[in-house]
Amino acid sequence: MSRRSHSSVAAKRRTHALVFAALGDATRLSLIGKLCRGQPRSISQLTQGAKLTRQAITKHLRVLETVGIVHSVRKGRESRFEFDPEPIGGIKEYVNFVSEQWDHALSRLKSFVED
Amino acid sequence: MDSVIEKRVELKAPVSRVWRALTDYREFGEWFRVKLDGPFVPGQVSRGQITYPGYEHVKWEAVVQKMEHERLFSFTWPHPKSLDKKDAPPDYSGEPTTLVEFRLEKTANGTLLVLTESGFDRLPGDRRLEAFRRNDGGWAEQMKNIENHVSKNHVSENHVA
Image 1 (cartoon, each protein chain N blue to C red):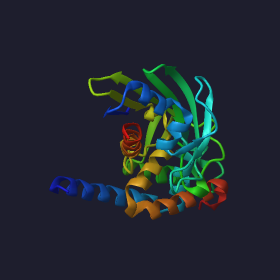
Image 2: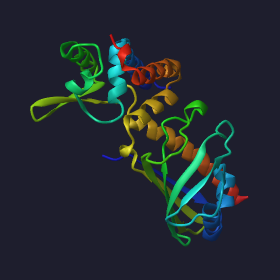
Image 3: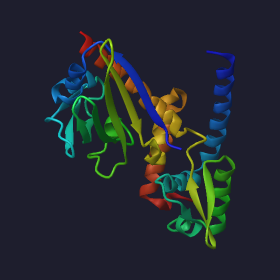
């Protein structure tokens, strides 16, 4: 492994550590649980069913926003919050995983048709 | 920006041989490692059971798109949230899919096979979490705990506080 990829792994781990620190809280985890299903939610929607006030929920959302795992988007008069998995695992990593599976499958196909 | 997988493989076998290996459901099953219920038919769902060691509990489900004789074979398939035994979904209906295409071209020595898979940007965030779990062993257990926690909290929201 090259020095460069070593340091990029280290940088990645630092980012992960910050993200996990931000996630190390029951309220914030439950907010992520609601957001990772894909649809942006407003603060009112996120406050529904929770025992916390709007202000408290907002404060937690800001913490998640700081590490980049949540983004707010303005829609009309209210902000909506959406989940962004990029800091912990981009779609690229999933594509790489699938790509490796294809390498294995195609090499099995190769032996299958060439034998 | 869509992510696309593209693989080009030179096969020392005639196009007709490769076509059969791709489109005969029994032959496909041999190298792909899946036991399919029946032949591939364009527009129809193909079902079966993965035979790859360790993944025998995973169901195969795809919708055959095109079968252009000895040129193009394509299907769409889902990317379930998790391949772990206890999390495996009972069925894949409503799961977002990607498009897999196999293109064949005759060459001097045999066949050029070009495989593409596209549509990953349609997959929701939790697939990315899964990829993260698979690709970074150190955090795998941690991620699992978080997921368990999140799903528990999702069921009874009144734990927040």
